[in-house]
Amino acid sequence: MTKLWGPLGWMTLHSVSLIYPENPSDLEKGIATRFLNLFAETISCNSCKNHFKSILLIYRNMYPGFLNSRQEFAIFVFRAHNTVNRRLDKPRPSTVADCLQTLREATSHTSLAEFRTAYINYLTKNWTRELSGDNMMAMASVREMEKINNEYWTPREIPIPELNEEDVTTSIEKSDTRLTFSGNLSSVKVGFAGGRLRLTKR
Image (cartoon, rainbow, N blue to C red; front, top):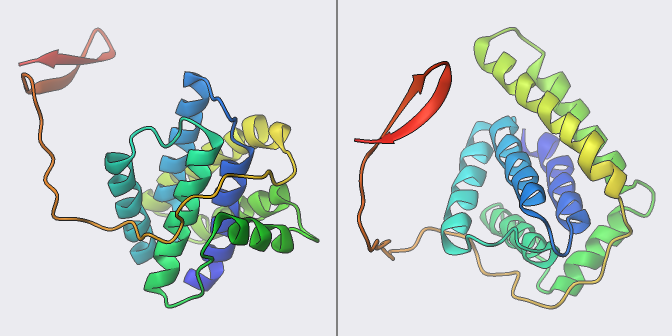
């Protein structure tokens, strides 16, 4: 299953990180956040899905502002891809320049937009093979990914840009560091009032 979704999935993530704005608005950060969440939910290999969701959660805790720029988003994807490649004992590019060169070679005959379309088509075929509640929910997420791709990513297509060098080899893994909080913590009740979702302090 990894061999089927992996190459197209990773090219999709690399492509959106590289066409992401250098100075995104809050709306654009929200679009990228939503796309990443949808991407994680629709991975067709269960163990891969769980691993990627873990990587994303850990990274968000370590670098909550990683969607503040194209550079930071791209570095996340390079590190995440290398984390998975390390687990699978596959080659790992050791520099940003190596990562970009690998992507340029991969797109010499197929554009980044074509890779994204191929991945969405693969997901559609995968999640419509049999009728189930889980598959229907996954397909709703795939349709939303397709809408974001068509209306946001594709119109912003650019050639693969240059990026600054940063560490891309450190694996994204759980650490023994415990999170500490300061200030007042209060529990929140989630419910509906007047037909709308409400969050209220208990």
